[in-house]
Image (cartoon, rainbow, N blue to C red; front, side):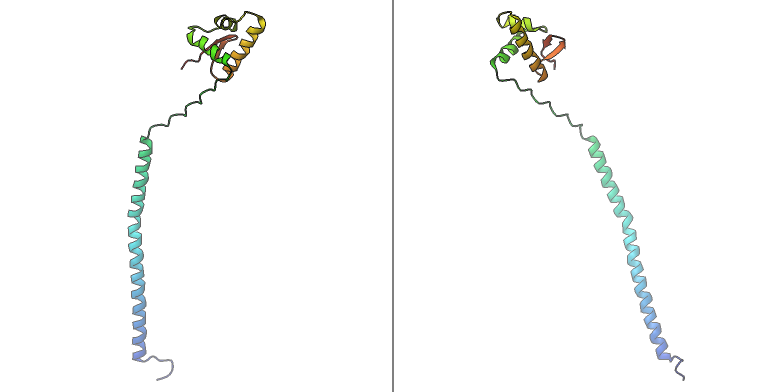
Length: 140
C-alpha cells in the first residue's frame, strides 16, 4: 500500500467520526426544532396576556379630574362680613348694596373699598362678577 491509500480500519474510523458528527448535528437540530416549536405557544400566551390587560384597562372607570383647590378667604374680618351678606342674599349685589347690608356709611370711599374687596374675592374664585359691578356666589 502506498501512503495515499486508506486502510480499511482508517476508513471505518473516519466513518465513525462522521456518523458521530451527523448524530450531534441531528441532536442540535432537534433541540432547535423543539425551541422553535415552543416559541409560537409562548408568543400566543404573551399576546393573550396583552389582550387581558387591554380589556382590564378599558373596563376601568375614567379618572375623575382633581377637585379644584378651595379658594382661601382673606384674613380680614370685613371679608367674613361680606360673605355673610352674600349668604343671606338671593340675588347678585352691587358694592353699594353690600355696604347697606353691612350698615356701613354710604360714602364713595366706603363703596370703592367694598368694590375692591369684592373684586379680590372674585379673583380668588370665591365670588363671581356676572356683569360689571354685579357680584354673586358661584353656582356649583
